[in-house]
Image 1 (cartoon, rainbow, N blue to C red):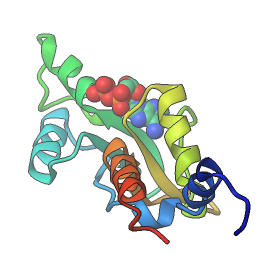
Image 2: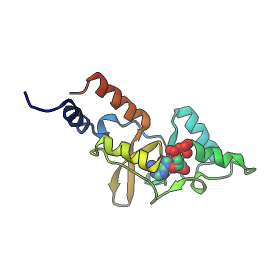
Image 3: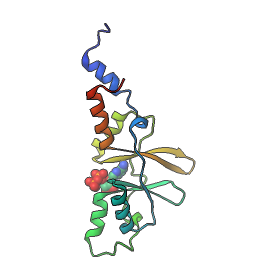
Length: 151
Ligand code: ADP
């Protein structure tokens, strides 16, 4: 008998959940593609957040559903507007790393009121995007915890 309470045991388990185990494949577009093409990608890939990179695959921005909706509401031609005009751009992007705790990524989602984070690796000239963490990934972890599937 360890003398640990149920809550302590749960907390211990939760703190073993790393971003790496729960991340999904990131869906990325280049920053010169049109708003129209980004909307098509979002639908085809069935994601709510797109990450934007330059031609060297370094993170330059994020596009949410509402960013794309907003850009579509005016009388502008969404075929001729590149996404870098409307995206949320670096350095104002909240990111995480594979070795981060999932609970810390979740806290970032709440604090910044966003749906997803890019999982990045810092390179010499920028951030390489290697994954994505969304509210769906966090929900999956929560269900696993409740069902006690995670040792
Ligand atoms: P939606 O806008 O569809 O509700 P979000 O809540 O994820 O989706 O996005 C809200 C705003 O925050 C958008 O303008 C989006 O570009 C921005 N955003 C989304 N993810 C991030 C992030 N990881 N870092 C910084 N800004 C982000």
